[in-house]
Length: 99
Image (cartoon, rainbow, N blue to C red; front, top):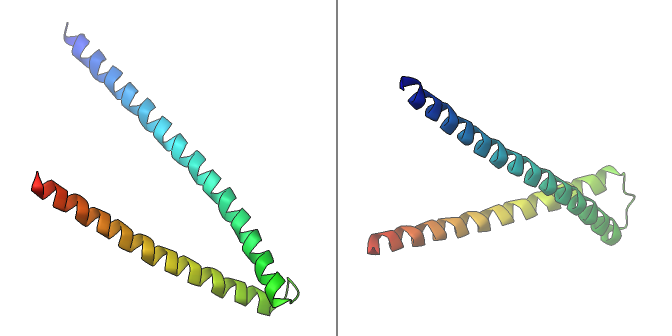
């Protein structure tokens, strides 16, 4: 009977490992889809800038303009997302206090 508890521990660890493998696999798959979406947006924004600026796609000027525009968009998006998440955390914290 002393082995029974050891087998239960091993079984529980096996289930935990399988759960963790599934979670990480899902995370990697979602990350891959995010990368594909990012590459699609990369191409779309690059074409849009080329359309409006009307310079050759492979010029240094076009690449710098593209880099500046993307950087600005990422900074703006990250500021708004950070503020949104902070407000959500504060709202959750306030809700926990009320309970």
